[in-house]
Length: 110
Image (cartoon, rainbow, N blue to C red; front, side, top):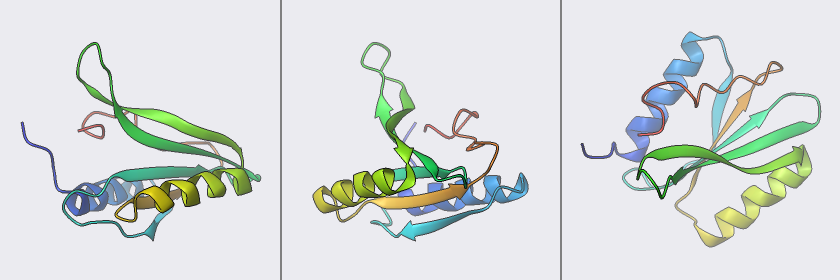
């Protein structure tokens, strides 16, 4: 099965979050077709976690991996470094005190 274009995936993810009453917004608009996506989970207590899609080398499956975790400023620095390497990168910030991001649900690693 082919991969979804980035802009379609982002819109679908934002819709799924909205349907679960989880606020989220795009903080960096990447390439519509093939831009990679970072998800920043902000728990609104000064802490954050950054996720990026990766590959399981054993199975070839795509999955979300934790790229950074800690104080929000440090996670923001990690995002800035990644955007320095890849200006086509999307960044979505999810705000949820309970730490929900839905990335473990079916269809979101594709």
